[in-house]
Image (tube, rainbow, N blue to C red):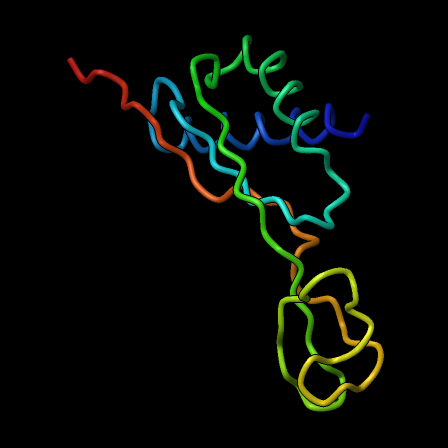
Length: 119
């Protein structure tokens, strides 16, 4: 389950951002996850719920924004989102073998943090 190692890296990233922004906790973590990333959203959520407990994200909400597949035609350069399961050709010029340019990503989109009390 590579979701565990992904969550470990994600929490480390959150810890670093919280520290550099002098935040006492992270309240919301937004992740962009491509539908062809190879990461199971439910497993990612489950792992996050378990691993967050000993971190600055202990009380945070995980939001996963799913990013669709996006293709670019190698012939005409058109970019398109596939309609249905047939994405073996360009929807504009019908040339075969378009390049997958979106939907494989997984990255931290944003964080909401609560600042430390300055007293």
